[in-house]
Image (cartoon, rainbow, N blue to C red; front, side):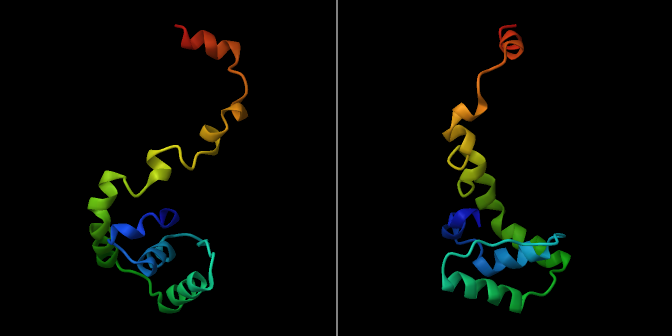
Length: 105
């Protein structure tokens, strides 16, 4: 749910997001739980989950297409806000001489 940023787009509900994630071919879906309300929401999603057919998936994706096309609700993809390396460039160390030579060509 993009750290909660997706929800103000009013395109999908948290339960729809969780149902979609549960419908994907994964062996595990991890959802962050920071309150009892969110834990209850996760239980509700599991309790009410039924595998989605192709039409249901297409319908859900169509609901989110416009908001997704702009990227404004995905700062983890469109910014360095969640990029630990961008926040700590020293993690990369010094640029090796061979790379410096490639960059000067």
